[in-house]
Image (tube, rainbow, N blue to C red):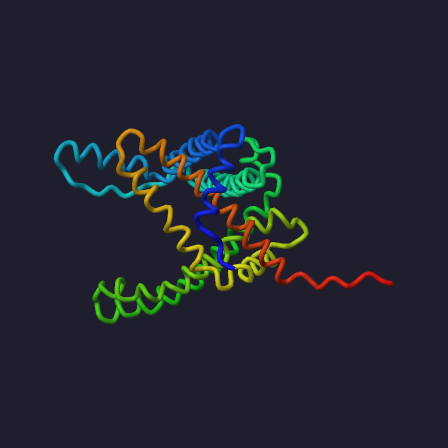
Length: 267
């Protein structure tokens, strides 16, 4: 049975209104933390300094390209890895928070750090789908690279885009893996990924359309001056809570269809 998109989004808005503190402030805090981690990462890998140099040259009317130079050697690489791990843990924490908001449970800023409580599972449940999607993307990378080398024509990068469809489809197959991991602590990450694929069988297009339904809000957050950033935070909260609700609905339907039949009580 298809998920009613309008009803789902209306329920997400209702959950946002009832949540205390407001999801807006929780996601704003997450946005600030993520921005700080991003800036720190750019400082360590030299990207920030390269942008500053190119900007200064542009102000003087010069167009130059400055190659980033990573700082700190091995220590800098370790710090960058630590920042990426922190971002991954916060992603799981956001899933914890949005699920609790959807379920009308007590939710707050502290939920954002719950991913650290399942540290290795949080990392692994994100690495596995990324690995599988990367393998599917080789269907595009390998032939397109070979054609570019043989012909010297870069337009193969565009002509070969349909070969990315399996990779995109795979990414939608694994979208429920994090939620499943949170709801099923007894399952390992491979089982969570496999169950996500089973749950999303025949539903990938439905979720893709749900993603597209937020494009209008995303467009407004980009083009509106001044309020664009504030609107983007609200849209982010709205989208993530809607996705938590989508998981709740499709998982409920899946379990109802695949639950073992109940035996009649003994006489």
